[in-house]
Length: 267
Image (tube, rainbow, N blue to C red; front, side, top):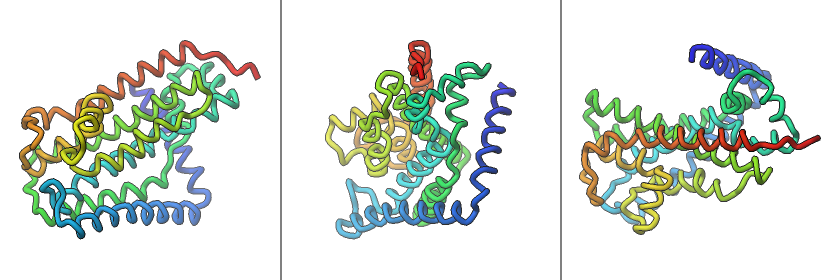
């Protein structure tokens, strides 16, 4: 484990040094990401400005949910971006080189591209989250702090799992399937609003099949001290971030299955 973490740290160092070669470009791209994601929250603000509340949620409460979802997604994009670009490795035959190295392929793919400019989305999510909890004057206790951190990490694990799953299908399709973007980018848009506003079918999908709402919506209920109109218990709300890690483990098992059935491009 220590060797694995050391290698991944080395990957991060190499990626940081390469991206810092053009600092002005990096800063401009990071600022652009911050402004672009900031425009997304303006849509949420305009919705609440028009209707006042949404399923009983105020803008500040929605901001807390929005912040956790976007911070989680930014972390996943930063550390698992290599899987998002895995189709290029398959088509070019670059993945064959990774198979010859005495390290896990998942680690090597994850470390092949660490996207620092996602700091812009991360910062924007943190700003919105801080504003929301500041307005609500959330009473931070140790369990709530732990739950908040677990929700962010669980969400990042789940989004990373989706990227791993998308990359795995490239073993057979050689192309990244766009349908997965409806679960990653579409999932971000969906889960940054209260789950109770959606139809039962969509709620079940994002709770049981791709549990994005499970690792974000339910913990936020506990953090805010809100009762759940869907009937979840406080114990479930505190345990729900674990499903993100379980989902990632399952996706990594699917990845290993794909690796075992991989056939070289022959080029």
